[in-house]
Length: 249
Length: 74
Image (cartoon, rainbow over all chains, first blue to last red; front, top):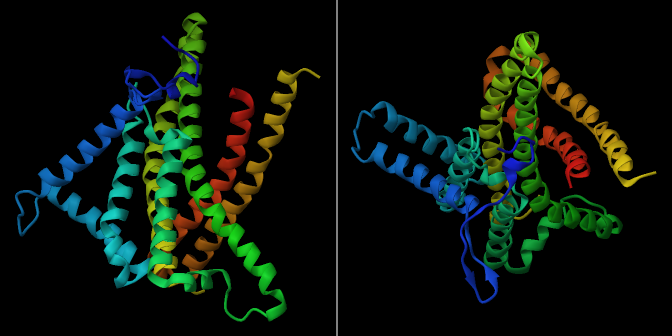
């Protein structure tokens, strides 16, 4: 049994598949992504299938999450932004459920790998750039020239704006990835303290209560962080989509 | 100096970056509380922005923690 904090991030190939020299194995990461999508989809579908006019408890959970994201998107991107609602809602539910599922013992956290969060962030920025260029053509680049800048400063300001735009996928992905990574490593480090303290006999067992309490507290914190990071990912997505829909500062 | 020792020292220095993040987070919440004490009825409306500002600031501290962890574990 592995007892260092890094083993939890190890990718294990459950069904090795190789196509043309490329690795398409079904890994533990893939399995948990499927579990995330299936559980989020099944929950939303099954709780709302009865379509009660006065919602039941679980139906109101689904309705509240719908309204939460709809209000967030409408506030950030306006009514013309609501066409992106399925995208933002799916993104939010996927990140939230993936973060939360990783907190159960022995389960794998899908979003604790940079490639997964980078793929999600590139999806968002790709949508922003493609939609912005398709809808506005070259006027999309007005995004990089804020209002009221003196003419001689425009090249400098535009260069800075471009760099800050290019840093968006990086910060979006690294924020989620680093939060999940750091949280889970901290959790396993405190859990390791419990076992290494209890090796000292009866006194050790008494002392091991403290890291156990910390582990419980950090798990609670990690549930909060799971929700918070999903919310921040979604709200930044809404803001970037607003930049694609209405490109001017 | 051995590479392992240099990594450990680098990881320790990288953790100093989290001090700045701590100051930032404290500033955000302090200003929110100061505003909330002056105008309690407007406080709940800004809660979403508070949480968003907190998360974006915290991210920078986590970036420096990430550098430290990368140095220690890879």
